[in-house]
Length: 139
Ligand SMILES: Cc1cc2nc3c(=O)[nH]c(=O)nc-3n(C[C@H](O)[C@H](O)[C@H](O)COP(=O)(O)O)c2cc1C
Image (cartoon, rainbow, N blue to C red; front, side, top):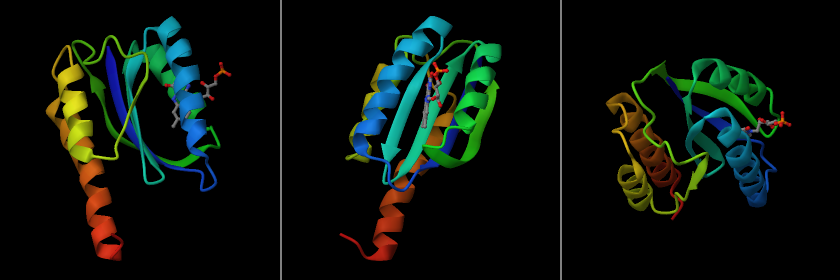
């Protein structure tokens, strides 16, 4: 069983409904492959956790890296895990308008605790947006 967390930058003209299309496709396709996880889309960036059998996960990730709807794919965590943290989420969009609520959703949905390294990266992803907005002086 493998877990992979990455972030990427959405294509600049990506419409919000495309995220829903990706989720719809993914939850169907992932269900057939035994893959689970979540997808955060925030301020033009994606953060996705994929978990499941390593061979299927790696195949999918190869396809995804070539998807032109995002770029600058950067792996943040990759490793073996005993069990998936979200065995019932074939691919779930987690709303990130409120980062506290997003974290709350993730913490409550777990069947098995998220590795700490992953949790730290999720928090950093959500925090980064606040600080970069603050720095830019955008309210
Ligand atoms: C940010 C992002 C996340 C994606 N996540 C998944 C996923 O979890 N599962 C999936 O099957 N496709 C996902 N895709 C879509 C794949 O890149 C690809 O379009 C799809 O797997 C092709 O499916 P097909 O071979 O059935 O046409 C994602 C695409 C993007 C841009």
